[in-house]
Amino acid sequence: GDCIGGMMLAHVSSAQAMVAAKNAIMGDTERYSNKTTPSCVYLDPELAVVGLTEEQARKQYTNVKVGKYDLSMNAKVMLMGKDGIIKFVTEGYTGKVLGLHILGPRASDMIQEGALALAMDANIDDIINTIHAHPTIAEGIYEAAQDVPQNAIFLLCQDR
Image (cartoon, rainbow, N blue to C red; front, side, top):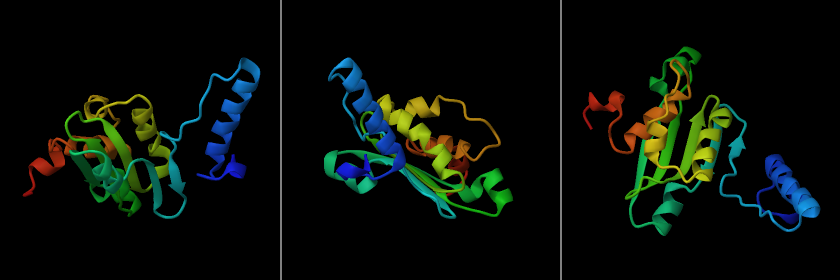
């Protein structure tokens, strides 16, 4: 884990230990991948990221689309007197989720949806077609996903 460098996070060390234990017991069948590793900063507001940044994606892909949601428009976040932003990074032709970035309340709890999307090679329509409970902070993930194809209801009424 932390001894080999790279992302020195407790959850990375734990995942690497599980791979090592499985390989010790079952033979060399498992490989560790950091593709779905979330990174979290526990401040106020919290910051959580998984996958590629927009800049990294633009270096690797010819067509990148992003979707954003301003958390200050979320009812629960408003009641908390907070704000923040959620941002999806996707491959523009296929909609494949490449990254999710969250700055705001509960970011470290919500980033798992992005990690799962990366693990499953999901596209943005998979996120859009998943019903998100209301009122929750996590429904901001849905709103950011809807912004990728520019279908976000909260933005359709605004002047872009």
